Length: 205
Image 1: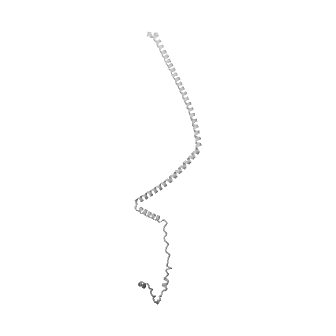
Image 2: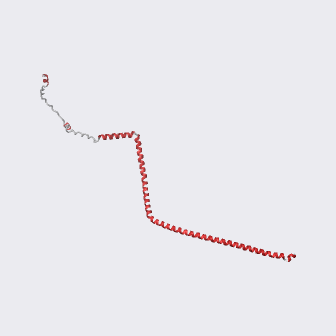
Image 3: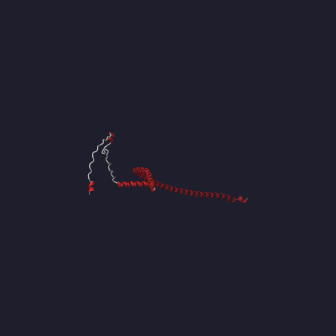
């Protein structure tokens, strides 16, 4: 107990000492600044992004896509197919547009032709009707003319037959007359011969 009290006794104050004068240069005073002057405010705490998880997922997906694009041949194949398809579609569109324009021009021309035909159709039908009537009249006239021609042919045939019959009759008559004349001449020649035979001169000789 006494030892403990001995340790906790207050020490006697030291005698005062003389302070030595310290000289400080003005250059050191100018350079030395209080610590408060060199204090700078701490930087503001970084505000976390509102969607750190989604951004991290997006970055991870992008990294995965780049890695996959570098090492996966299927990606190159799909890219080639996509490029080929786009080029083919562009070519088809480039070819189809002039074709569609040409078809449109043809449709417009056909529509104009149809309108013109509809406008000219009544006059054309009237002309066709008149032509049909003229053709029917011409056929009637031709039929009448054919009947007249057939009647004339029949009449001429009958006349020809009559002429042939008359010619045949005349030939028969001429033949009969010629025969009768020949017979008469023959009889005339035989009569003097008979008389000469029967004459007395012929008998005496």
